[in-house]
Amino acid sequence: MPNRIPAEGKYNFIDLFAGAGGLSEGFIQAGFNPIAHVEMNSFAAQTLVTRSAYYYLKQVKQLDIYYQYLRGEITRDAFLEKIPNRITKTVICETMSNDTLPGIFKTIDGIMKLRNMQSVDVVIGGPPCQAYSLVGRAQSSHMDHPMSEDPRNELYKLYARVLKRYQPRMFVFENVMGISSANEGTTFKNLKKYLRRVGYEIEWHEQNSKSFGVLQNRRRMIIVGWLKNSGMAYPEFLKKESPFTVNDLLSDLPKLKPGLGSSEYRTKTWSKCVSETEVRTVDDVLTLHKSRPNKERDIEIYKRAIELWNNGHKRLNYNDLPEELKTHKNRHSFVDRFKVVEGDESCCHTVLAHLSKDGHYFIHPDIEQHRSITVREAARIQSFPDSYYFEGPRTAQFVQVGNAVPPLMAKGIALGIAEQLEHRQG
Image (cartoon, rainbow, N blue to C red; front, side, top):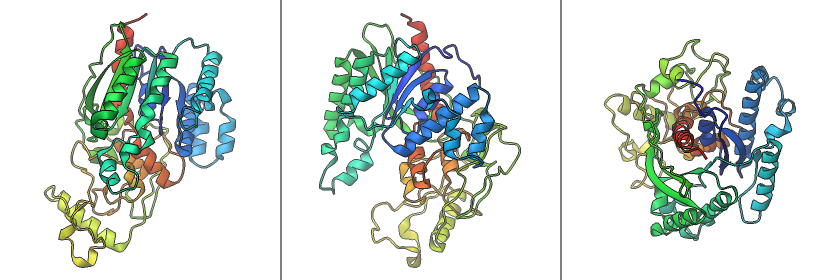
C-alpha cells in the first residue's frame, strides 16, 4: 500500500469533535495536513497531543524520543518539552458552544497565520452521537430528560458556524445511522437545512468500515458537502474488503490470562494482515496490552461462550446458563450480553465505548485466554496502528477507541475527498 498519494501535503483540514483522532489519522495517512483539532474530553485531547508529537518526531527523524516515552523511560513532561508549542497548540481542548466559538476561531486564525495558510480545504468531524443513537434513545425513554431534549442534538449548528466562517471547499460529517431518524426525522431535516444555508450542496450515504478493509462491521452515516456550484460531488470511495480474519490481526500479540499484561510482542514476525494494514512496524513498542481481571464466575461463562462460538458459531443465551452463574434479574433483554469476538471471520461486531464498563460483549476467541479483549486488541480491530497511544486510565482509553472512526475507513474517505479536490481546482 503506497504511503504517498498525489495530494501529499497539499490540502489542510480542521477536525471538530475530534475524539481520539481516528478520522484525523486517516486524513493524515492520506496526505492531508491538520490545522487544528477541537475536542472537549481532556484524555482524548491528550491523546491527540501525543499523536501530533509522534508525527512531528517522525518528520524530524527523532522517533526514538517517542518510543522512550512509551517505554516509560521519560515522563510526559520531559517528552512534551521536546515538542514545539506550534505542534501541541494545534489541539484545542474546549467544549464547543456559542460562548467558546469566538475563542476557538481566534486560536485557529492564529495557527493559520503562523503557518501562512490562506484557506481551509476540508472540515471533518462528527458531533457526539449518543443523542442520535438507537441504543441511547431506547435508554432515554426511561429517563427524566428524554433524548429529544438533549442539547447535543443541536451541535450541528456549531459545525455549520465553522463552515460559514472558513468556507472549506468540502466537509465530512460522520455520525451513527440513527441520526436520520432521531426525533422523528426532525434533527436530520434541520441539520440538512443548516448545512445548505451556509453555502453547501450535500449528499449522504451509509458506509460500512468493512468495505474499507477494516476487520469490523461498523455502519456509519457519512454526509459530504461541497461548495455550491463548485462542480464537486459525493466521492466514489474505493471499496476493499479484507481477505484476512480477526485472528490473523491478533495472532502476534502475547497470550494473556485475566488481569495480566505484556509489553513484549509474542513473535518477531507478524501476519500478512498486520503488514498490509500497516498496523505494526519494526520499531513499535507494545503498549496497552493488559487484560481486565475477571471473577471466576465470569471466566466460567466466558469459556462456555467461546466453546459455543468456536464449535459452530452459536451464541450464548443468558437464560441457558446454570442458575449458579446467573446474577442478573433481567432475563428478557440483553440475553446476548456475553459475546465472543469473531476470530475466524473477516469482521468483528461493532466495537463500542461500552467496553469501558465491562468486556462481556467482547470476549477473546481463544478459550485458553478466557478473558475480554485489551485496549490494544480493540484498537487493532478499529485499525489503529500499534504506534497510536491512548492517554488516560483504561476506562478512558476504551471509550476513546470505541467512539473512534476506524483510521483505515477514514483514509479511504480522505482519498475520495482528495480526488474530488484534485479534479476541481480553483
